[in-house]
Image 1: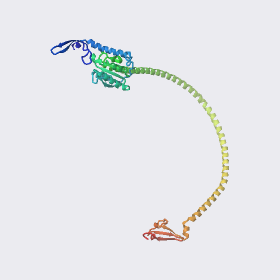
Image 2: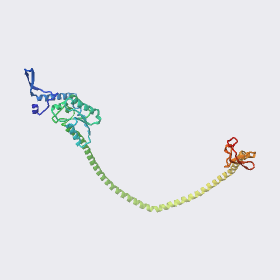
Image 3: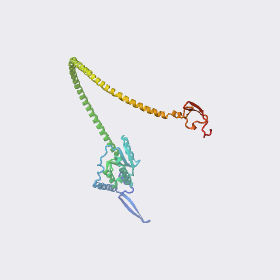
Image 4: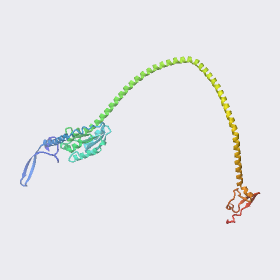
Length: 389
């Protein structure tokens, strides 16, 4: 441990760390026990073994054409939908969110928690990558971040499965693990940032570049529009001058034509009036002649129609008289008075209604009997079959 401190604490002695030491073996004869005393630690061996393993993984991925695959993916113009893989609540977590928040841009950040040290690093990060891969359409870029630590702490990212997963990831991946001098396999298969803050700044810079391009385009458009407006103003001014000159020329020519017309109008008007008077007289003569012809024709038609109407009217009148006499005879035959003349009587109630049913004239009813000669007043004693007979 003293040697690690002297070397700047490049790693810590913990499980899964390979070390090479010089030791002395002693035997305690009384108890029959061996004792091992470590006299020295080869720091370079452990660091070299980690570097060797990292270089072997990078070489293998490079030979398979995977090393430059993810960095070749085009970075979106506006990577505002950001996925972050890191330890929740860690310094890296807070640094990334703070950088994105303070940029002032409308980032949509989704953080997937992951273990970034120890044996669970590989499966935890792979699980987070699977989460974002299944939702690739909802994100523009993914950040994998971890704060500083010893080299052996960061060596957990020197994983071939992690390298393959990042290299073949369908979205651009930015890796911000450790400090500037630290490297992992992921730095060789993705876009590398020095720190988690630098990874977030890379995304912010991309959005800022897009904003700058928009601002430059707006400024260019504004300048071009101002130039075009100035040109159009000059052209409009020149057109206005030409229009004024042309208008004056036209006015002068029209004034001259009006003067000529004012001299020609009286003579032309007199000629027109003479022609109109002659035409009017001719029209009056033709109208009188035509009216006389039309009147004569109308008189002939009236005389003809009058001669034919009288016989038709006589025939129609005779036919109507015959129909009227026939109807009068039928009415005379069905007149109730003819029945009375044969010795019958017509009974009526006091209100004038004809009595055709004995029940309509209960006992005490006042009736009238219309006879051939005169009318009798009667008092009903009720129906012979009724209860009050």
